[in-house]
Image 1 (tube, each protein chain N blue to C red):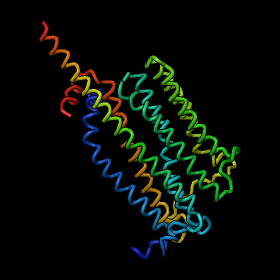
Image 2 (image 1 turned 120 degrees about the vertical axis):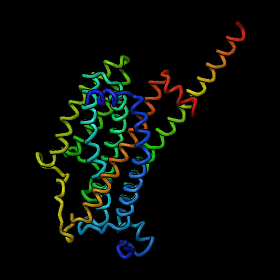
Image 3 (image 1 turned 180 degrees about the vertical axis):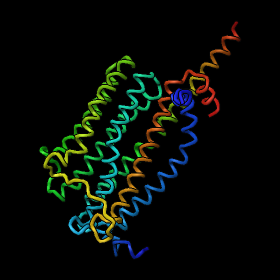
Image 4 (image 1 turned 90 degrees about the vertical axis):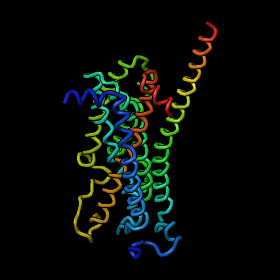
Length: 247
Length: 70
């Protein structure tokens, strides 16, 4: 177990393993994305109240749900960096913060585009779900700028890990905001097996396909940028030199 | 299966029951978001490899000049 753990932390090992996984992840991502998008745009029936704007929701829900994974991920990688001083964890954390900011932004933008027609407003400052999601975006931008502001990488890792703990509290707030407070944002739709129900299988299976697609996209994008980070930070090592001379 | 397609014409498809702008904006935004976060790291990788390669050949040249002059 410990051997496996320390091996996993080795950038070279990760680079080689992820290289083998990437084609499969990309293939799975393409399949799920295609099925999800074609289903969403062509086959998903209009909702009896929302009309075709329900098609916005399968994208919005998938991106929003996935965006909540970033702070727990940052917390885990931050802890690993602090406790075991594993270089790889910090490389993942650096890129996860950037990708997480993208996810939060797309969540807000797609939500706004839905809300503007269904709620009649693009933004509502009194809605705790909306505001806590905006706060997540700012926290992630904070993590990114904190890293670039601090020269010493060890100090940066510590500071980022600390911010990640705060961020994880915010994730809980985002998740339960719709239940704790009276919000404009609706609560999660219960999954229904009834094909006649507006949130029946047709809708939630499409959402599920999009969620899997978005998670696969997250993995592919994060692996790609982490591999770049490895090449840059390990450029003096023999294995990278060998790799470059072969390419 | 084709019966399940919700539109009878292409114009209907674009219109999305009157919500065309919002639905297509969301899907367009999503497409850009996915494409950018895949293409940028791929292009960065090529740039890194190119730079490392250039540095390597430069090093080799310097080394070979050194050995000739000595």
